[in-house]
Image (cartoon, rainbow, N blue to C red; front, side, top):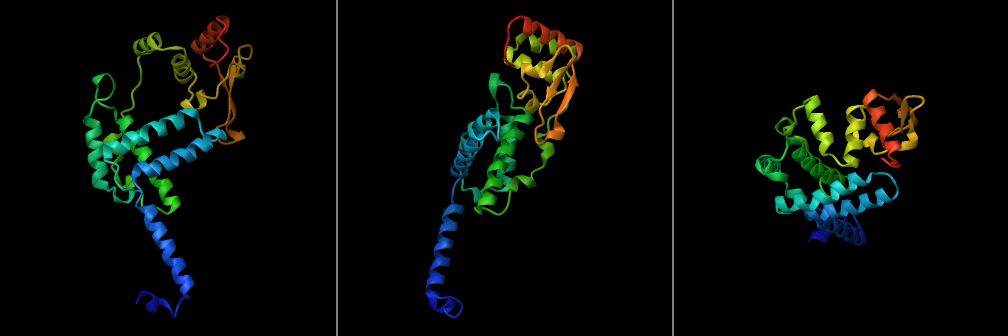
Length: 231
């Protein structure tokens, strides 16, 4: 009966081809969040090997996907609703993370960003048509912007390891974003010229030289005198 309905429009082979394509599409659209997340993870690993994304970006995504899949119950991606994500955000904001403290709004926002990344990938692949994370109220998990006091800065630096100290010094006293800090090398620092070079993130126009502030210059001199060769 189905074949007869479309025989005037399509040949038998064309009808069979259309049915096969639809069955294949339904199979893909029935994949779970975890399955599609793992598929995207493999794609990101390939991009990392080509130098298109950072190691930290890959690590964060690979770590978060299985956790989120477990928390959500690993539903089919197409079955994830706005209400489901609202409940997820509420639960995460009330749950405890490291050191027994409640998870920060920023942490929960990172989870939603990961879910959004999986959904955007699925849309490009034709698995789903809508990214429901776009329907969420961002204010619920928006972090308050605060300014560290000198006392808080000293406490952070006192307890930070070398790598984190680098991040703090160039972030606090150099005004760099984390993505920029990861690209800084010692040979980018010109003590004689009292400046350091920042590689462009997307294009040559983003390249620039930044003046060394007194605290950052003093720290750089001490690190170089101590024999550190890498940031």
